[in-house]
Length: 414
Image (tube, rainbow, N blue to C red; front, side, top):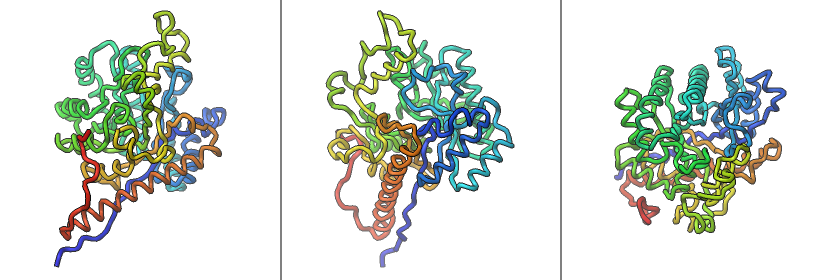
């Protein structure tokens, strides 16, 4: 008699980044009472059907070095760190966690940790350390953010800068028992310059190089990746091949969290500009000089937005041909590949919906609530379908030596 393995699908915790609704709590109420924003977001999250939130931290608008009108991606200082996060503040937030049943997956602060200006870099590092302090007091396992890029140096020189300047941040994370999970967005529109890759941790080859530097300094366990498939699509990659490459290279452990955000490629934009995006006449330069008008600097993002648009999961058409061409995310295969190829405990790996679909970026909570709730329900359903397929095929059938039918999507196939 063949051995019997039980059907026991394992699901990922589903969450949402609080940047999806930047001003859930109006500033006239939250600025004098900073933790009110977290309490109200946790309460809002109960109606979205999530298990957790990714708590967005950012420099307060009054002290930020990048004007709001120059930004494309949503940024929220739901976690207000103008003043240090204290044990009293932590107890207040933990009471809200207890009453809502919604946990905090990590604290997310997305900024350029290798900024070329030493004073601005120091300001950003100090704020990241404050974010780490808050994460530690809240008992969450990680902070999430970017590495960034020193614009005055080559990519090889940035590896040296990473070793000298970013590794000490990882040491700070280690001292607090935290991981630093790096999102791999290349941030092409972060500056008006010609660089497309403005976050050096943009692709698996670089993750491995950076991790090897970290290992030499005893902080390899702190450096992890918060994978976002939208950025893979932006660079012509597909998730299954990325995960297979990490597995083949012995680095299947590097991914520790995931953003759920898609990318829908505009074939006409690719025909015009290719995957490098619009290189000239964007509107961020005027008469050969970078425009002094901060609003014009948002046009730098044409390097990305001329060829693609972010997808909120569930809002784009089901398009198998686009999946095959790596022009949008095949969510079911994404979740299957994670289980088949990565070294994950899926039950503790957060799957965070990051809402950046521009035309649905509604900043009215009553209008946004059903949109987010629908996307989150879609995400949960896809993860559950993948979990069931994986358990059936790789556990139940495998135990009885029953082969899986068909071929499926294959890594490295063009």
